[in-house]
Length: 144
Image (spheres, helix red, strand yellow):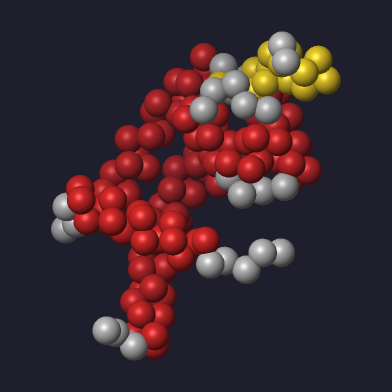
């Protein structure tokens, strides 16, 4: 079994590699006047259309108050749209607009190529195992 310090060193190196990938992604986002938070929101809506603002926030690990303004800006830019929630008259459901769908469809291949480069050399099964192990580690995260 590897020592905890060895594992910490490996995680640190993986983190550095991911930071380089995120930097490349941020450059692409900047060209589209998007922040990483904007992308998280758009990606979440792409994966699960018709979410409440609170559900979007939960899906990206943010407080609802932290996504309220970015969602409003994305709405004003025509990238997302809102529909009344038939189950709760006080709430709106948020989804990508056709313009937002087109933007996400254009950016996904760019981001997926960055991820593929990061995971190069791992089989599909190994990638699934890595995801499972990382999810397990996240379960150990201290609660705020």
